[in-house]
Image (cartoon, rainbow, N blue to C red; front, side):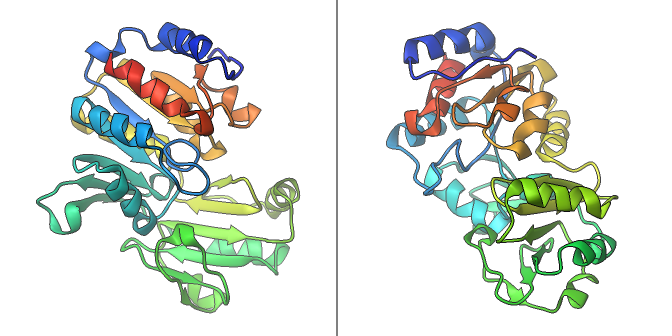
Length: 288
């Protein structure tokens, strides 16, 4: 894949996007969109321009909200966006829902990928005894060790002993070590020898674990096959390391301007940052 540097010159950005996305507006597209840093800024705010173009795009193409957020934290974004039909991939690919205004709550769960986190948690406890742990279950509920609550859960976690968490079936496990940098945490994880699960480390010392082989990309590919959309007619936009697989998977992978260099390196093209409505430029191009 080619790489490109981000720029605040919107005409230069449009020219880059034209080069990589030209001709797609006339096709039936599957578009995977990350949430935080892609659709909303890191304060959770969606610009009016983003809101308007997202609704138009959802009417013209199949839009998939693809996020590390839990189901409970994803649904409010879908509601704010006004996307009543389409799909959402939650928990980094572990839960997929179809939006349908006729369904209870406006959605139905169509796929969950569960795993047994006990061995991984036991291993991590040895190398990170002060870590906070949370387990997300298939129904969207969370259980966590004492004092670990986070808005990204979308619900209040039920406090539980780590031994109890180790016996649960999970769609996602979250591990957080407040006093470590991401680099230090990465070293701890590498030394732990955790295996048998997929994992990614975020902007902070925050680890998301899922079942083997599960990612935003795996869930998007399942939807692509279900909907019989050509692989060349897929687009993904994201800004985080948990977006790398879907950016690589997509026929056209677009990194946000504020994304780390490692994310930009796997993308086909780089748009402007979230603060410059970089995703708006992408969707405008896909609408023709």
